[in-house]
Structure formats: C-alpha cells, structure tokens
Length: 479
Image (cartoon, rainbow, N blue to C red; front, side, top):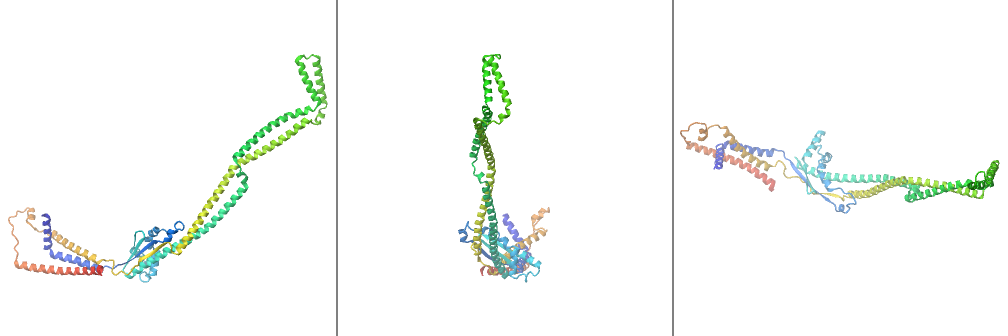
C-alpha cells in the first residue's frame, strides 16, 4: 500500500507541477538534439590485416632463422604510433600543407593522430587498425597509407637485419679462421718441440729410473771393491813386499809357540828389518815398476766401472729431468688443444650461422617468411563514428524525463506551505474542522482546456523529437 501511495503521490506531484515539468523536460531534450548536430563529427576508418606464417618457414625450421609472428604482433601498436612512421604517412598524404604549416603545428598534429589511432589484436594473428578524423576521406587514406607504410617498413627492416647479420658473420668468420690457423700452427710447433716428452709413458720411465739407480748402486759397490784391491795387486808384483808379508806371517806363527828370545823368532825379526831397509832404499824405483797382470786387470775393470757409473748417472739425470717436464709439457699441450678446439667449434658455429643467415636473407628478399595480408582495406565511412546522434537523443529523452521529475520534486521541497491535515497536526495546532476545496466549474473548465493545450503542444514537440530520432535510426542502421 505504501508503494501505491508513493506512486500516486509522485504522480499527483508531477500533475500539479506539469508546466515546469514539461518545459524542463522538453528543454533538456531540445538541448540534446541540438548538441547532437552541433558537436563536431568524427569519422572512423579501419583496416583489417592478417599475419600468416608461410609454409616455407615451417619447412626450413631449424635451418634458417625466421622472425617470430608473436614478436611482430607485440610491436604493432608501438610501431604504428611511432613518430617516425606517422611523419612519413603525413608527408605522403601532404597533410603538412593543409594542417601543419609550422613545426609546432606538425608536432601537435602527430600527437593528435597518435591519440586517434587504435590497434586491436584478435586471435594473435589478426589486427585491426582504426583512425578517427573529422574528414572521412583523410581517415580512409590515413589508415590505408599507415598499413602500407608499416608493412613496407617491417619488411625493409627485416631485410636490413638479414644483410647486416650476414655481413657481420662473414667478417667474424675471417677473423676466427685466422685465429684457428694460428692456434693450429702453435700446437704443431709445440708438438714438434715437445713430442719426445709428451709421448713418454711416465710409469715406464719411472720404472727405468729405478732400475738404473739399482744398477748404479751395484756399480758403486763394485768400484769401492776394486779401489780396495788395487793397492793389494800392486804390492803383489813386488818381491820384497811379498817376502815381507811372508816373514810377518811366519813371525806371527812363531809367537804363538815361542817367546821373543827364541832364536828363530830373533832371526825372523832381523830378516824383517833387513827387508824393510831394502824397501826404503829403493822407494823411488818402486814407483817406476810396471804393474802386474793382476793389477792391470783390476785397473781396467775399475776404469770400465767408473765409465759405466758416469753413464748411468747421466742417464738417470736426463730421465729425471724428463720426468719432471712431462706434467708441464702435457699441461701446455692440453691448453693448446683446448684453445684450438674452442676456436674450431666457434668457427663451425659461425659457418652454420652464416648458412642460416644467407637462407634467411633470401627468404626475406623473396618475402617467404611472415606475410601481411590486408583482408579489409579502409573505405570512406558513410556516417560519423561520433557523435552517435541516436544515443545522444535517447539519453536526452531519458535525461529530460528525469529532469522534469527532478524539477517537480525541487519545487515541492521549496514550497513550505501546509499541504495536509497531518502536517498541520505535527505543528501542534488543534484541527477543529476540515473544509474541502470548492471547485468553480468555469475555472475547472478553463484549466482543463489550458492543460489540454499544454499536453498537445508537449506531445507535438516530443513527436518532433521522436521523428528526428527515427530519422537517425533509419539513416544509420537501416539504410
């Protein structure tokens, strides 16, 4: 019941204030209609471009380097709104003579065009470029020229990249090849100088050194023995020395059985002294006496042993030095081989990349990679994209109705007169009686005629607004 009461209350309120309600509502509608025709018209032209991957790109996958389709799509929005590209399009359309005669005007025109360009990507292989301008012909020509310029710049940049990459790889191949040749030369020279050291078996060499040291030890022992036998052999060649030895031995045997006063003991001692005196008298002659056969044999063997010992010492020293140099030589060889191998791998990679670059270059020159296909080129738009008069007029009608009701509520709130018995009771005054309004039939008739005229005028004016709306609907959506 409360909702029904409120509805009737608002309806009676609007009916009571029908004149300002009608005037405000029609005024707002009129402003909306007029504004829809006074607002500057903006025409939107758009072009749809499809990016497709060529079949050849899949066939040469892994052999040639082809640009990624995803990368091309990612940079479309930035590329199409770049200052460089827009300036080329403006110059191609000769807009500088008509819209940008000064540098400041040209920069402002570029900023305006950047705001009016919209790029939408669909399904990762389809993008739509749209542009809004006050001239439908300029909008069409700008979009078509922008798409054409973008495709040309894209293909041109890819060709330049391919040419630059091929040239760079060719230069690097020459440099790396020279370094590889130098590394091979240095490695061969090292092998020639250190080949005897590098090819030696360390374990076998160590075993040979141990055997040589054992032989050296045996030779040193034999040398000492021969050096001890040498004086004995020389003395054995002297008769006096031999008689002295015999007498000394006989003396020792006699002392075992007899005393020092025994005559034979005395005689042997006397003989020993005589022999010694004789040996002293001919000491200088003894030095010139030839060695005996035994002494010569001992001397010859001693000389051979010393020569073998010296030879073994030289052999051991040489092998020990060789053993110490093996790790250094092998480390140097390994370093040179690694350097050669790394340069060889780099050289092979550069050759492979050069082949890929040359194939990619040919594909770019013949447009065999990513293909930009213009599905829908831009055409001259038949009606402006903004303002949308249908939407503006509809919004104006709704706004007018809302404004009319709002003005009725506002006037009612500004009226502080007592409008009902309940409001009077709230003020604390006693209500003794209620006198109903006495209607004058003539006044009531005149008021009805006046209201009828107002409603007829309002209906006629509103019909005119609806006719304008119908015309725009038919012109925009049905024709």
